[in-house]
Amino acid sequence: MARGKHVVRFSPLEAEVLDRAAGLVVSACKAVFGPDPICVSLKGSAVKGDFIPGYSDLDFHIFLRPDVMDGENVPKAEHAVRFQRVFGHINPEDFDVSQFQIYFINSENYPKDWAPPVQGTYKVLWGSLPETAKEPEEPAYIRFAEQHLSLPNIEYSRRSIVGRFVDKPDSRIASIVRLLGATLKNYMYSVSVLITRDPKIAFGLKLDKMTDIVEEGIGSAGHFRGFYEHISDWQRIRKDPECARQVLKEGIQALDEIARWRRNQLTSPTGIL
Image 1 (cartoon, rainbow, N blue to C red):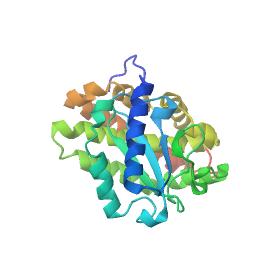
Image 2 (image 1 turned 30 degrees about the vertical axis):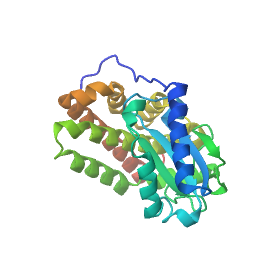
Image 3 (image 1 turned 120 degrees about the vertical axis):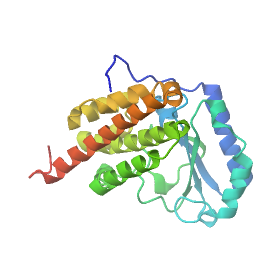
Image 4 (image 1 turned 180 degrees about the horizontal axis):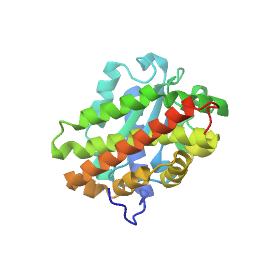
């Protein structure tokens, strides 16, 4: 894909818009779960300041008492139906976001395959963060990054995204590009943790700074920068299927670069490159 002199463009949501969205989520939680919510928090790009209008989502974590949960991160079906009934009329496009990404978490059993949130990357909207979601020591984040960056994980992600893409009509390509962007960003956090060996700094990086660290650290040919530069012109991705196809190829190449770097790490005599 041709390289231009573009930069990744961010545009934080206005405080009034963000407050209105957060209020709707908190209100729905209280209406459906009554005394059972422990904490409602907002995390991700809306907090860190690397929000891309139309592309980024609002990422809410809702911590609930165990008796309304079905496992670590799914509410019981009857509560899920009630919440959707209360919240289902909300249109994310009215807030210039791709979606309200709402995760329900067992307050006494934090998901084992999730890295607990790092201070500065989230904002508590209501209640207080449970002890199970408090920051562990730095070695725990490094172990999580190593596990996340397993070659089978990366290969599964690549195949899954390509498989989802191949039969989509032009009008649905953008949704797969967005899925790729979210997947790639998650792997970039893990790469940044292993490169910097400082998880709290790595998780606090804005997307443009993290892109610089990752590209330099793994010796990228620029596919990460190319992908996110074009992503930040999200309306073009949505309107131009050929552009979306090319951007998807760029993102897959970035994912392949992570796999190649990780494979070299694991096979080098010292395990360090």
